[in-house]
Image (cartoon, rainbow, N blue to C red; front, side, top):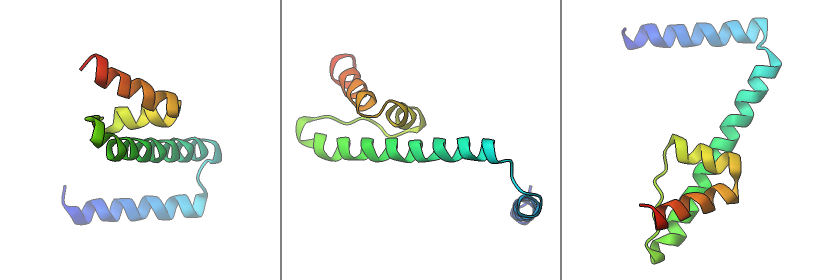
Length: 87
């Protein structure tokens, strides 16, 4: 598929959602999931920055960001423990 076709499809879906209206419940759930994903990635970023002095580096990918976003500080602690004791 060409890039212009993809852009046209994306714009038409956006216009369709703006005119008809998006379902509120699924969009709310997707929005909350995206916010938790970003928070998890930020937590992992700060763990990597401050843990560099101690040799701690947890890779930031979709799975680790979701674990940190859903579990919070306990998720970060569990990923650091897995990195220290298992890997």
